[in-house]
Length: 145
Image 1 (tube, rainbow, N blue to C red):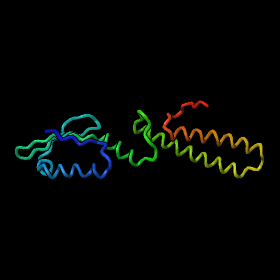
Image 2 (cartoon, rainbow, N blue to C red):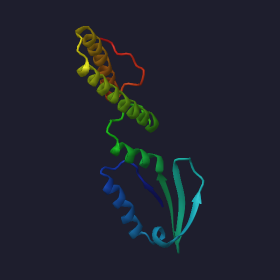
Image 3 (tube, one colour):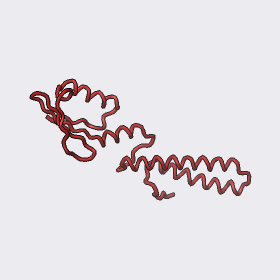
Image 4 (tube, rainbow, N blue to C red):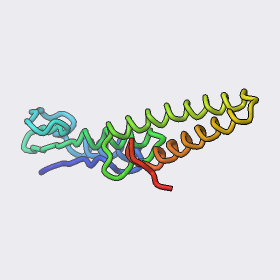
C-alpha cells in the first residue's frame, strides 16, 4: 500500500489534518519501524512497518514548501515561474516601490516647473515598471505602448 500526501490542498489547515487522520487509522504510521528510502532531492520516501502492515510513504516536500510560501506571498505566481524567481520578483517589486516613494517625495519638494516635469516622467516610468512586475512579467521585459 502506498500513501502519498499531495502538496496543494487548500486551505493549509486541511493539509495538516489529513496526515493526522491517516496516522491515527494506521498503527504502522504511529508506532511502526521506519526505514528511509533513497529518492529525489525534494521528495522524502520511507517505509513504516508494524506487525504485518507495511506502508510506503512519499512526501513531496518541494510541493509543500511551494504551497506554503505561495500562501504567504503577496504576489501571484506567473506562468512557469518557480519559487526562486517569484522571491526575486517580489524583492524587485519592493525595491521598485521604494524607488517610486522616493521619486514622489522628490516631486513634492521640487518647486521649479521644468524639473517637476522631468520628475513626473521619471515617476510615470517607475510606476509602469512596478505595474509590469506586479502583473508577473519577467524582469527586464520590454513593454510596448
